[in-house]
Image 1: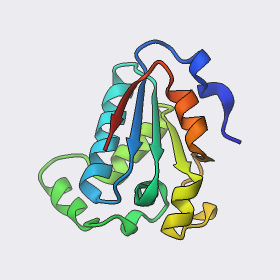
Image 2: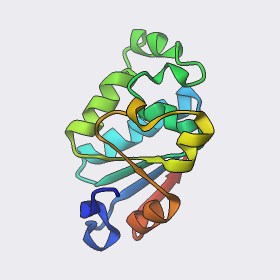
Image 3: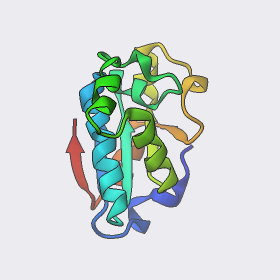
Image 4: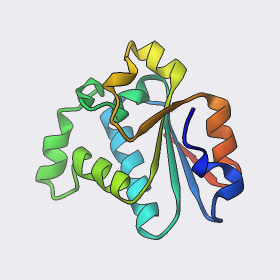
Length: 136
């Protein structure tokens, strides 16, 4: 069961809930850009990865489609995927992996970052209540 500290009833106003459905690098990277940006301006964030998007929450995120693009992103002076994920974790962003998404992607829970909670859609929707929702 996920940590109940991020439940909607406790969420400060202005929170952001990001729903990452796609398993492509570009959308996953931008999900973390949004999450880090929101946290930097004191907006609490929940990032829920579902479907193939769960690859974004694994220790080895090379399962993301076009993951090799990260080198070009960094070469252009933009924060890379590892940097963004670390920033979101350091700023206490909540990372949730969809239980069904893990099954669809053929991933075990031990493939996830230690900061990730496994949850279902009802948990995400409850936690997202009252927050702005962005879907990628």
